[in-house]
Image (tube, rainbow, N blue to C red):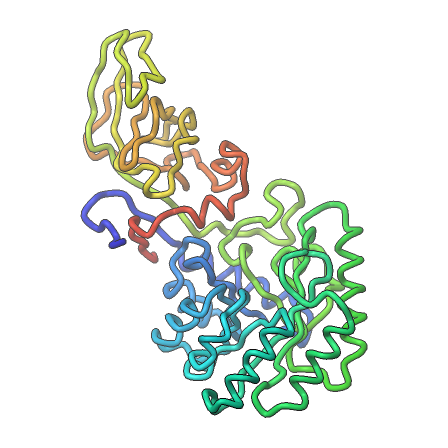
Length: 372
């Protein structure tokens, strides 16, 4: 989907905010800890290549992505740093891992055996850099038994097709006040580390939340994600370890201003009817851009004043109730500061009953990103 550069709806990314968030994490990390910038899902909706450029300037050691295509995009954009694919990559694309020098998470014995078959058939010529993923309690992907881990290590160490680059896991409750499961997972990971005769370069379990609130996490690498974008991993549950600077603003303009009479309705289904003469503004953003229909009733900012979204949000447009007649092309802020007031990503998430991760990732490619 092409970016709609010829309409006023746009995402603005504060480059300095991302830079400072990364710098703060680098400075507070333990000696010997490396920081990888997690830029999967279009950098959590912020724009992958633009964010990666800032992260490189800020001093990160590598990148984490979710898919092989994201890794290839970074390579084609000229990034030489280590790139780790956190999701499962099909063995049929193993040659791409080698061609683009991408490290990959391995979660099953079947994956290793399939790669061995390709190697013996002459399909592979160089080693694949692998990070064994341990399921310590997340229940998503990874080896679950010590026996399987030992078998995987034996395959890797006795073959010429794999380079054992890392051992990793992921915490399920690092952003929770209750740390019982976190402690159990951390001990489980240490149990696996202790059986290694030859440890890989990277041992990693920590995402942003673990780095913030669990200083005793296992490993020498932080996969710095949501904190890089200035958002608290716990939402409003736990206090930030240092001031985070949100990087993303979402703005548009009024494309039409009109006055409707009492009794007239707005949008599909007549879900909102004016009980008095009312000024209505139309804004060119809708659910096709990731601004969901459930945002009806939420208030956004125009000229520093909160204006309620009235009527159902359409695919490409929404309507707001204005306190008075306002100018055509008046700035509209859906996320960010406008005058003395501010709408945060967390405010949007609260209205939707979700997390700000989802809000950011849903913002569509049709909205152009500008780094300022």
